[in-house]
Length: 229
Length: 120
Image 1 (cartoon, rainbow over the protein chains, first blue to last red):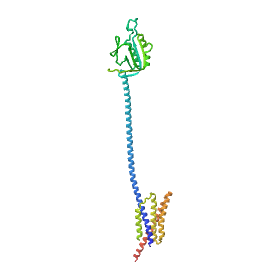
Image 2 (tube, chains in turn brown, green; image 1 turned 90 degrees about the vertical axis):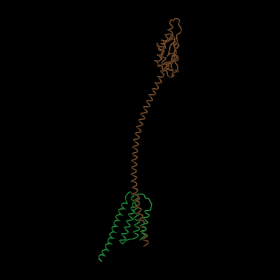
Image 3 (cartoon, chains in turn cyan, green; image 1 turned 45 degrees about the vertical axis):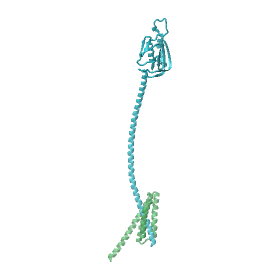
Image 4 (cartoon, chains in turn brown, cyan; image 1 turned 180 degrees about the vertical axis):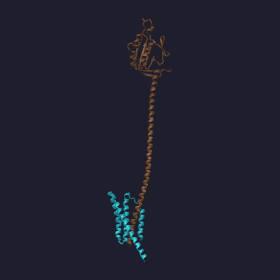
């Protein structure tokens, strides 16, 4: 009888264990399922947040791109303006050069006009001295052939310079210069030299007027600016 | 009579306290084992009532059925066939039959003495 009871208790022990364990396991599974439902909801929530963030990011990115385009446009405008300023600065430099406000350096020619030798056969002394119109002719020829700056006996000519015949001397902007006249011009030396040497051109005419004409091309001429004008 | 009850209580206690984690796919085996245990238990009660109870048959059937059901479910999972359904079906049907037999026996047991007393 006791052996039976022991066997029965063993059987019931196993039965109780299996029952409760299964019960607990099922409960755990349900709980796990509950958790997973909660997790799923949280997952969905987070996913939605991510989507929202990404959309926001995209719109911001688009805004950024638009702003960058605007900035690029502005920068392009700046560059153009800079180009304009650069051109203007260049122009200003050129005009200053023409006005004699800046020091000019470059290749050029030097023309020397001297009075002719005394000729006893010639009655009129005017026939062999250098006149202001001779100087004019040379200067005009030089300007026409592209001279950037010209000076007479070291005095720079500006846009509104005047040259006067004043008896034995000529007057440039109030300063009197005697012969010989050294006319220096900065520009393309070859062009200016060939322009002056044209057959029947300036040189021939001056020589016809008994003037000693000498032409020299120089690699570097420096002209000081005019002060106080 | 108190020893089996004590065993049951201890079993329940162990079941509640045991902190064993088994994977979800093995919970099928456990449910089959539960079913087999219940079936054997009710089978034993019926046999007792029908006076054909054999202790050896009961005890061996109890454990053997549990192991067989679990291994059948295991085999089914590994073969890709839901064999545990067969075990559920078989044990379920037998469970109902056993309970029905127990009910009838109990009914006749209760009604026969009453008739006797009425006759008296």
